[in-house]
Length: 302
Length: 302
Image: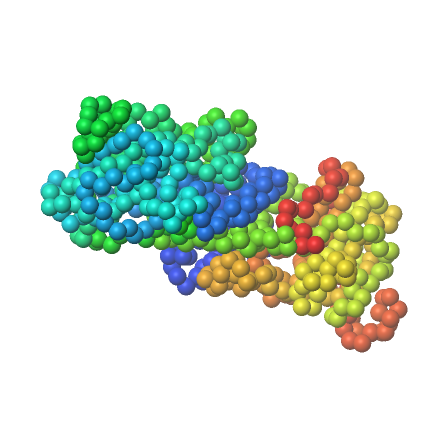
């Protein structure tokens, strides 16, 4: 491969993959070579910049542990995670939009009864959540299973705490809907929180004058036989970071306007000590196979 | 950033970098977002493929140690290292072509006298090297310093051995040319050798049915005040891997046809026990500043 110019080089590299037995892998590698070479050519990368990039990638790799996946975080802040989600959910007429699973889903939970308070021992304004699960025509799906998880007042998930999994789950639960597709539970109002900034991804955000905040949200994973599993968030309207989510996860249909109350007692009969909120959301499921998605590798923090 | 489609998403991510203070970084990040998003869109990556990629990157990071830079090796086999070299050396009319520094350059050495045997204690066919360093018009550069390094009969550099740096240097030296720009030394005939295949890069080569071999070569780094430092290899004509160098480093002008001899004595007066070789090469240097290039981070194996 005695190239005379850099276009010949790119052609040589593409040709080196021509005997790849798996045709899909061959296609991906061909596109990878062309994209990466085009990037280098368009930016006219200097040696110093390239050396920095190599070192950055190595440091990002070293920041990956069983409890943290810095490459997922990097893909998140570059919008690549949401893009992979988007291209795998192109046809969703009438169905609830999807968004990233995120690094804090930790898998199976035992079912809790409706009306449970999943925030026991955690401080925060009470929030009552009322969910309905329906098909795209609005007909209830009476056999749906709903996983829910969100961060506490300090922006931490139970699985990020040293006491997990010995203590918990906390702000994390699984419910089965009733025959009308409904369920309700009590939790606390979630708040904005920063993604981890003490690694190479934090360095990137700093260098580009971007903030690390995610707007307040509750994660949901809804699964039902005969329907495509739905991985999504519900965001709280009014959060100042809705337009600048560090991981680009917000879609307007996923923003919920809460009802604010202060009368006593609250829906579960307990006395109100201040404002409390009601979040109501209806999930519309698309037909499909009912297998729950496998969490991303390295994203289980437990 | 409440995107309605994946093109809007890409625009949102690009805009998120709009306040980057360093304009060059802003440009690079913008191109990175566009290239990486285009790649994902063109390949329609599945979740499984994306998860594999994330895991592959993390494993590549974990394979990086002070003695090994797996991301450099990955860039090498994807032709990116040679591309960065090519775009930084576009104008070389009359000058010797450049190629990658490679991971085995370990920096400064003390000067050896002309005629030295740099292969003492290493088995292999004797090779006598005669170098001339000139400017692009052919005028000798009498103040050039030439670093040389190459692999042994087993394809290993001294710096890859456990005994390094206590033992050595071996097959590695620095020379000053004479007033005619010339120098000569004795070494052994280099041979083809494989790049390291026990990490993620080996996995990539395996999956794409590519061999890991580099054709036989000798590395040179030529530096002289008033000239651009020249990082290159001289390849041995006839090597069966010249057309399929695993790292795409071969350029036809860098291939040298050796003289083969078997008469006794050899040029250094010692008796011949079999065939011996003569490699003659003239390096043409381009005007520039005479600072020697900094080795890539993490590429020093010492």
